[in-house]
Length: 110
Length: 113
Image (tube, rainbow over all chains, first blue to last red):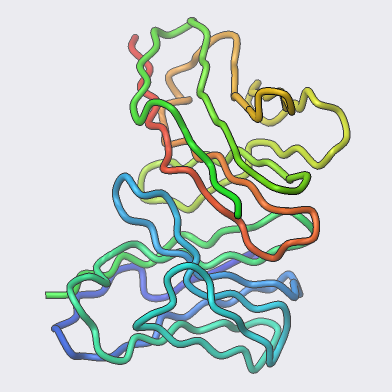
């Protein structure tokens, strides 16, 4: 199993551009999560999903959108990139109480 | 509401010395508690978890943590630090029936040869 995979690994965006961060898991987990990690701030939950077709907001959802059309995929969309969205983004899937994290996407908005 | 406080954003220990990383939580209901480790440029890996069974939890790489309800603490320890333990460590909490996880701000562990 590949586990949780994320693409791209690194991206530079200009202010106002849009992009989609991809996340795929091959463990057939119903729960999936998107976090952002900023220095000294730990991980903050952006959105999560409890199954295909169901998503919900976390602590910091503003400026982001998600969809969950399949169990495997949980893409995160940035519509109008802002410097405040410069961060490292982690996707995770969950089985029971344990989360499994992807390697992260480093995003720089200039 | 739930929250996690990790005391000490940076901890340095000598190789072979005791490692103690502190975590206190607040939760209105019985929690699940977790410690994760993050090596540079990698995702988080689960070290250990407390899920209401034994209060002393053993994890990977010789780490363990003790759940103390009276102190609302879940401190991480390792008797003898190894150079490979240098990393960022995160404590996290969730409710038994919750969908969300709340992370502390992390503790960076440096191991001095």
